[in-house]
Length: 284
Image 1 (cartoon, rainbow, N blue to C red):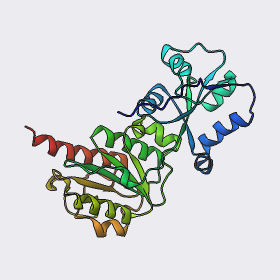
Image 2 (spheres, one colour; image 1 turned 90 degrees about the vertical axis):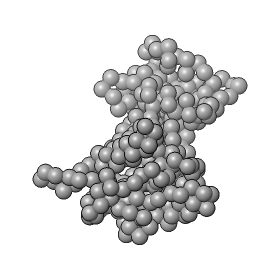
Image 3 (cartoon, helix red, strand yellow; image 1 turned 90 degrees about the horizontal axis):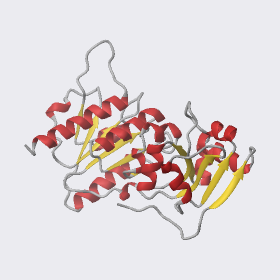
């Protein structure tokens, strides 16, 4: 497991009592995608998110906490450590402005982004890679990342014009799972195709399986025991034509009732469960 980067030097400590440049930087990277990209940083909060980020060695620029609040043993240990470059002590009202929770979090963190391309995902004999084609809902993407992690995916590729993977709703929806596996980005299906071709050249027989309500093949009739790249399309328009062209098969979830579709994060969970169910049956 990758260890968190540390420094022999103690973190620089700042006392922030007004909406100065430091506070404004934290606030703007929370709200603005362009600024997150510009600064290469994003804001997270909560025990689960911060703990998992630290566990998996994400670079922490700063820990933020309220000046008048007694910290738990967990938070106090992080603030005393040399994991972060800086520690910011904010006035209580500023901490409340930054926190997204009903009860203000005791600790927030400014984290350095990781810019990963699909080649960061290592092919394997029992591999599972989940591709999201132009996801537009941060909440759905976050929940889907959480499901992918829970069902044993080795990595995620987000392609095309998509929501920012470091959007606060993505990170929060993932419950920190985004820190535990490679979540990569690419411009189109062509990079996914190239990744699969490279994996096959290394002896890993990956299949590309798409998902759509416009096919007649049910998920239960598709064998998922091979290494698999699973494609989930955009919430509104589904998979792009490029993905239809490179898929070895396209499957659907049987749906009844008045509606013709389900939430993409629900679809992701169902598809991933079926893959896990089939693979576990081989172990019996």
